Length: 195
Image: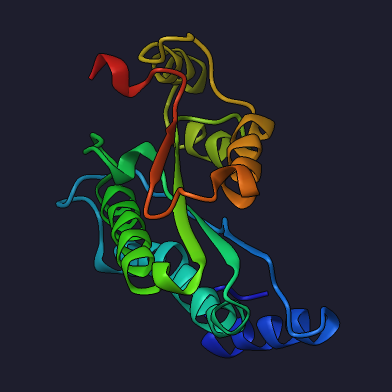
């Protein structure tokens, strides 16, 4: 589906709710795109593309699903941000801007809907071995050298596996996290510990 289309997001939400008795227990907003560049090398179209996918997509889906969660007084929305949502990253201007927006959106939603029983959190992963990262590597003249640079700041000296980020989402969606809302859970292999 086109995550940047409000109509497409609404149609997906209506389908999910219709197929599940007007119930959605968990929404994970995981769509995201990236871009390499500073403010001076990031064209307005680049920033707009990241804003549309990284921020508006989560906004559209959350708006479409949240009323059913509020009506049931239960549910968990998990937004995928990044360590770039809680710190600045060199040559990642548009990505950092949009991931900060996701963290802010998460916190604002948690404050607005906490009393309804709906919990809203986000995960801020460190660098993770995904096709998304593979695509970013190809933007560099020497991808293997840049991969070494990507791994180096992590205390664990490796990239995360997608299953490790998924485990954090499972925790946030579970009853074990019943008192967790408005959180930006950093899952970064110690990336920020040395910053």
